[in-house]
Amino acid sequence: MKKLLAALIAILSGAAVAAQGATLSVDWRGLPNVEGVLRDNSKSHYGFVNFVAFGPGWQYVAQDYAAKEHRKESIEDPALGRGLLFTGKIQAGSSKLAIREEFYDASKDGEDKTHVRWTISTLDNAPMNLERAYIRFPLALSDFAGGTVGAATLPAEFGDEWIGCGDKRDIRIVSADGKKALRVAVQSGNAVIQDARKDKQDRFELRIEFPDQKQAQSSTIEFDVWAKPKLDVPPPPLKLAANAEWVEYPFTNDIKPGSILDFSGVVAPVEPAGQHGFARVGKAGHFEFENRPGKPVRFVGGNLCFDANFLSKEQVDAAVGDFVRRGWNTIRFHHIDVTITKDEWNDIWARKSYPEISPERLDQLDYFLAQLK
Image (cartoon, rainbow, N blue to C red; front, side, top):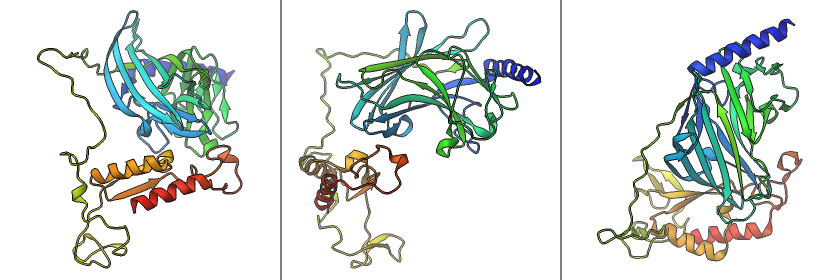
């Protein structure tokens, strides 16, 4: 009885703290933060709601580092009024997705509340083909271990990976000291709490999962967060149309040879990589080649991740030509170790030994390296 009474008091006091003090802001990536409540781990001072997806073969991607073409503008909803609209694009393995997030001030009767509608959809009208997709609220263990979710206690020690959150229409998670609280009401989507110590993370995660993310072309979750919206909604967009005074200018990301953006002459002369020996730091503190001492060299380039390291020969030829015209003379190959294997991300966490390398992908990488050299 004492434990139940303490849990009820913590819930009520925590909900009051969340209603009166917490604010919800959205950063440039479209990632919301309930300030003062969300932390990625016990040592971090910040945290944010992150979108996570596992594409075909369980290829992992997250919005904080992988989303692109971010855009913020205002939006009008007949029932909720003017709000903030965020859009972006992301690729989960071979699945290319559009992200659409809407945020509205739903405060009422003295309670601060933000309404969120979050949609993912394919860019090619095909099924999304995702193994899993959800957004996660990170809750540091040092804050919430020993706290409560509803009438239940969040474990101080790891037990089960999945923890029930009660009625998803009114989830109340309160810190152990009762000073921090997260209250969420889910109208569309599934909700669960993960004890992320299973994955060696220093946090709990409240996850709201997108329904039917494998077969559907789009999926939406909708929920309220008891926090004061701090949305910085821009004014309605100004729309321009071609007329007698304005003409549409077509944009392309390709660099035309010989154009003003062709920097291929900066990387001159074009010589096979390695011809002058290893790069090192010279006496003057600049990079130079060991067989060309005293002549400084500057490295400029880009970073390739996952499937971008494994292209067809036609794609490689086009990419290398583009890199040269950009003035690049170096490339970083990043995240090739899993993608180069036959099984890729399938059952990666259950493997006891390193999987077999795909001969096709190895050939693609070899060709890419040879052309870059």
